[in-house]
Length: 100
Image (tube, rainbow, N blue to C red; front, side, top):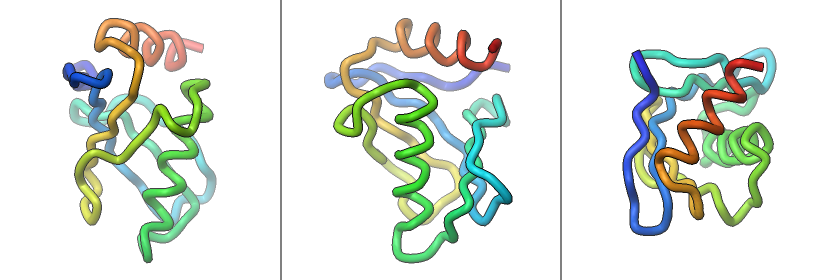
């Protein structure tokens, strides 16, 4: 199964499965069609969402302004807008990161 990445006028939207209160910040690969991302932050006051943005930004090597939570504010299943990358470019980047 592959990670769901869809077109957006500003770039691409990637499905993310969040795991708050984890022992470390990490990207664990694919989980049910989503990219599984663990963060140490608790799911309170948006802290886990902010941590997810930072982990994704760092992992993908993007600027802060390129990664934005699009949906799933209070849900483990989230959608992140990745600005400036087509779905094909984002899929290739994610695949190369997961392979290394």
